[in-house]
Each structure stands twice: as structure tokens, then as C-alpha cells.
Image (tube, rainbow, N blue to C red; front, side):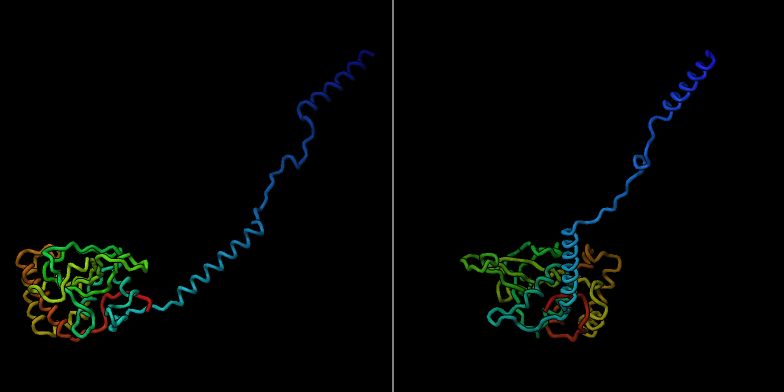
Length: 267
């Protein structure tokens, strides 16, 4: 009997040991890792589709806007002969070294003015390159746009007006109109035209002018070991003479090919 009781106790102990080690049965659902695919809500789907459609329409719209590199040659307003505003905006956001050879030509209708102050800082508020060379007494410019007092709000008020002007080095400047006169007050000045920066075809066309060709040969000899941006005195003199020769040739309507650095603009 004792033996039977001992066996029973051993059996219960074994069952208890198994229950303590294994614990309660664990279902597969408790051990499983749940993966849920995040699907956008219906409203978000519609918004994304609308954004995609809008982007496609914007791309299509931009693609349909035709731009041109044509240099305008006609006044947009007979009362103030200036180039189209879109062209001026494009010109003043960069530096186009070849452009003055077209716009300063004697055959063009644009108004030429001359600096009457001894020195004027050439401020360009349109984001384009600003020349380091200050404007000097007698410098020639082409008027691109007249800015009436009031800053374009459409309300005309009394006060000084500003002019957007183009310089011979291809940069823009916005200067008070009172700083200019319509006659040549002194021998015309201009910032240096750096020959190496001009388009190759423009160079070839300019060299057909005898004065330009001679000045270019003299400049090559004088500037052989000099920087074009910080020239030695002999090179500076030769560059000035070459610049004067180019200016004269352009005023005399030297034949130029329709190439070179020019802005893209919406006509």
C-alpha cells in the first residue's frame, strides 16, 4: 500500500514538474508577428492624384511656352522706345558679353545716354552680375527700361525715376535718371571689352574691320603676359584702344552674325 501511495505521489510530482516547466499552453496567434500594409486613406489618394495631375499640367504648360533668343529691334512703346519687359528681365538676371554688340548698333532704335557724374556705382537689383568697374563721366549706356516713381504699383507720384541700362561689358545697372544726359559731355567712356570672352564668330566678323584688326594685334603683343581682368599698364592701354575700336565699329553697323551670348525670353 505504501508502495502504491509512493507511485501515486511520484506521478503527481512529475505532472506538476511538467506543468511548471511548460507553463500554460501558448496559442500561435500570441507568438505571431502581425504585418499590416499601410494603405492611404481615400482622401489622401484623391489628393495625391490631384497633385500628380497638377504637376503634369504645369510641365505641359511650361513646355508649351515658347522662348526665343531673338534680339528685339522694335520699340514696344513709341513714347518711350525700350525693348520688351520680358527681354529686359532676362538680360538683367545674367551677364551677356556679346549682347552690347547688337543693342548698341547704330541701326537700333534704342536711346543712348551718357553719365554726367564723375563716378556712379553700377547697382544691379535684378540678381544679375554687377560690374566692378564704376560708371565714369561720359560713359555711354543703352536705356532698357524707365522705372517711374512708385515702384510699379501703377500709381504715379512725383519724384525721381530710375533707369535700367545696359553697359558695354554686358552688365545691367539701375541708376537715377538724373545721372544721365542725352548728349556726349566728354570723350565717351566704356568698361573694357575683353576680347577672349567674345564669341568666336563675332571675333571673326569684327576682325574684318581694319581698325579693330590693328588694335587686336597691338593688344595681343601688349597683353601676352598680363591678366585681362587685372592688366598691366601697357595691356590696359591696349585693351582700351581695342575697346574703342570695337565701339566705333558697332556704331558704324559692322556686319555681325546672329550668334553669341543672348538671353532666352518669352516673346
